[in-house]
Length: 269
Image (cartoon, rainbow, N blue to C red; front, side):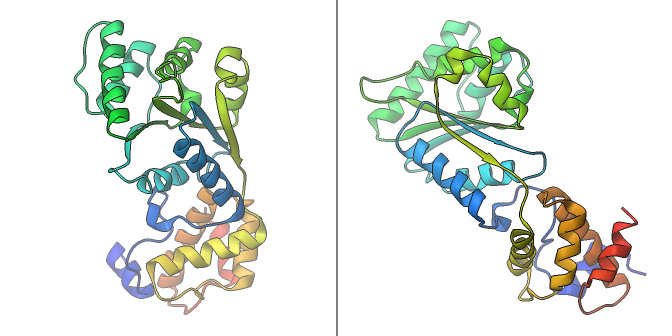
């Protein structure tokens, strides 16, 4: 009986856990809809749009895509702040924005905005684009929180915004934004992530394995088909099922993961 992660990784010859449900950019897998979303967001940032919106179903890779986006923005050209938990009051949200930009906190709202404006102006003078990424934005507590973020897009020069705000969240975020006309009108780019198709699921599994080991044939095509059927193409569920299959397969000392093993594991989780 295996009793350690080391046994698990050594059995399959893994350099890392390929199906860990953490947003590790090393395991970003290109596919049509993710690449399209990435290109639109990159375009919006490069052209200094004011607000961008990325939505997606739970577990479909929004956070991983956002981390890949951030990693791809050179620190020499971009000043990026990430707010990962925006379930805050409007004042606390502004404090978190300043904190993530590495700025000192100040007591008054006017002082907060002035401090941030000075940073954005300084970046613009040096040719650096300023970007604020707000993950799980559907968790913003109130309309006033969204209004606080909208006001940040008022920092402008005559020909461009000084700050690009990227809102990322579950599908309900689209409805919340649509219910705030003054915010909705500021959204320059909108993109959405859905579940993987059957073919994308097969490619996803092989690519994640390829990022962790030289073997991309561990999961048979039949196994991938059952994984798609059981997960409905949702990345987070694919990861959980594949991870359990690798663990169970190592215990059973199999050389490949087939459809029968996936079915057995699926009954256990």
